[in-house]
Length: 349
Image 1 (cartoon, rainbow, N blue to C red):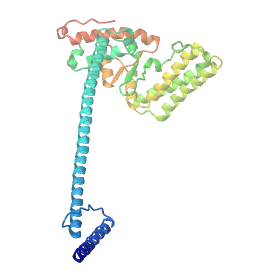
Image 2 (cartoon, rainbow, N blue to C red):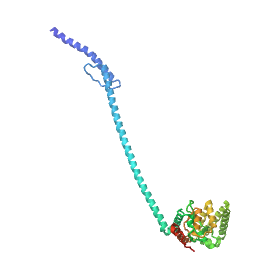
Image 3 (tube, rainbow, N blue to C red):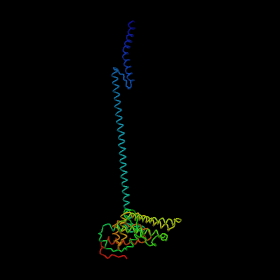
Image 4 (cartoon, rainbow, N blue to C red):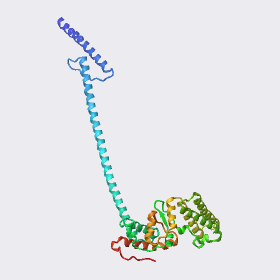
């Protein structure tokens, strides 16, 4: 009976003795888990605090490695996506550039075709407006000066062209804009040659001042020493004519005489402005002393001074342009056909 009572007590004591170190280990692990880094606590038979701590470090490194692997895979997917996107954009841009290049080429071909058609029309079947603007005459002149034939060939066709006709033609200097000039516009010594408004006796004084100033400029050009004062005097004379015209029609600005006179003043002002360039002075000097008698003489004069035909502005210029075009065309047809050499050329009166 006594033995049976003692035995349970001994067993309870042994259990208490075994529980003390186990409780101490659990407390140490719990305190380590709350120190800032989460640990995985695995209680297995025979485990120790040190072993469990190291095991926790191993699990942490394993998790870190798995995280790094997942991050690397994500970065790879992200990078691959951007590469494919950039390749798509590059291919799209390349295709767009290719299509744009085709479109530009088509537009260029269309412009060249339109250019060819326009020049073919101007050269072979010009319209009235092509003649009035001088385009048809300039197209023929360009063909004549293309250099296909020698200069001696041009001397054969004696297509007549008088000095007076040449002085009535409007010219423009290549590279100086579309503004044209002519000796007939500049030199109007007779009252009846002026627009109707300036034929009134009240303009006799300013007309004479302009004619004297222009004569002075032309004389100085002959000597090759045009002064600034001479051109300024001519410019002032034109300005005074415009002022008198404005004063005369102050109450009637829409009068056709005023409109026609103002147009002539603008032409004179532009020509005087052009006189400030040396190239025009030389061309005007030679035109003032022009003595040619054929179309070829006119061609050589225009070629020497790099001149083109200007647009016909006055009724007189519009009336003479078709005839000048006809003579230029006759000369060109005779020059461009080799078999025409040696044949008697028609002479225009």
